[in-house]
Amino acid sequence: MIISRPSLLVFDFDGVIVDGMEEYWWAARSACLQLTQASAGVLPLAVPSLFRQLRPWVHHGWEMVLIAAQLLEAASPLRQRGAEAYAADYDRQTALALEERGWSSLRLQEALEAVRREAITNDRAAWLGRHRPFPGVVDRLRHLAEEGVDWAVLTTKGAAFTAELLQAFALQPARLLGHEAGPKPQVLLQLQEAWRLRGFVEDRRATLETVRGTAGLEALPCFLASWGYLRPSDRQGLPLGIDLLEPERFAAPLATWT
Image (cartoon, rainbow, N blue to C red):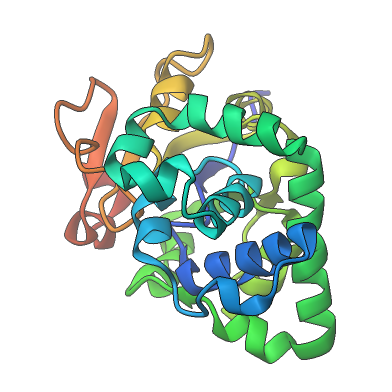
């Protein structure tokens, strides 16, 4: 007897389901101030333009703490060269900034998560209030069941923090996998063993290209969320198998996406 696998649509979280720009800066700023023991007045409370411009290049949360540290120093490459030039050499600049400060990605991630845990414990409402779901996304996710499709969240954010936000939005995915689960291609391969994957929705083009280039995932439909944190060139010349997902298409039945 052949048992068919249930259908599953997989979503990234930050930049696809939730816009947390205010919280990203608040948490990164707080963690940076604790690590450097700098006075609070040296970094603005409002999201700086340079931080906002670099967000599309961020892959892991700890990188945001490093960007905040760059904004502390008037002589830093980011302050001196601007976001566009810094982004053009982003990976190298990130590695250099870590080395110069003697920091590790693990230390920065732990500092970031400690700030968030404290915020949830001391003022959960305020922390939740720094996030907002993108227009129409919550309602669309709730209606996927009508098409016989389950959905999952696959994110580089910590699972515990993502669960807090999903609960606040009254959303219940079939699976929730945070950065603790491992690299996204690896997790998708694992999910594929139990589910019929109908697609992966992400706002980071490089991640989608890595997924499509992974053995066993070459046929997985990938969608670039147009409303997310995209780089200026991300929409141009998308390779076969990666489609730009506009809000109108997202609202339409899943069968019409490809």
